[in-house]
Image (cartoon, each protein chain N blue to C red):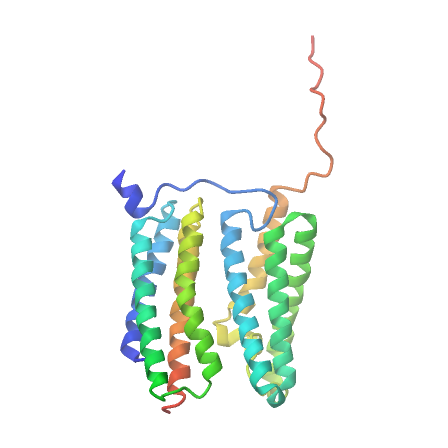
Length: 163
Length: 121
């Protein structure tokens, strides 16, 4: 059909596996996480490389945030038990980070002379850093419920047929 | 680097974002229309990069040159990466991936202009 070529063929439902990044919506979140990992990483690199002495604490915090985003991205992509646990830890750190740094940057502005990703709850990034961990935790919960990791394999022999 | 060019880029990026969201809502993958608009966006970004590089060779450099160059080279990769990803995506979220890429381009274009104008302020 011509419409399918121009406007896109009907989509496949679901997606899958027990990796949080396996579902379609999960992959969108992974894309956003990847973008932030890159953006925060590049910003931290430039800040540390060109003007570290101006605000070492803020720039080290930028670098730390970048590492957290990278770890979360990797965890979400890898999936499985280990990946989920890694992602959960990284996303929790991220949520605490954005809340603590966000609050401190507003109450004690002198401590944060230059912007970081988490300053003022991520205002410089349209508050995406505040929403992202919430979506991440939601995704981990949802995919966890939908397909729990198969702990005990199903019995190999077929159930005995009733006579 | 002109406000006009950035405005055109933003308009095309916004169109691409809307098209992407529509195809997600319609439970469709992306089609040639999306790829065409993404191609147009990429073309505009390359024009912008050329304009900026020519101006910089002419001695008109922004105050924060490393960051500016980072954004300038990063932004041209976004529609390509988003397009490739969205095309390989089988679910209806392909359009959303495209829309996220378009939104990133829109934000980065204005940030670029801001960095550029830091010299002329």
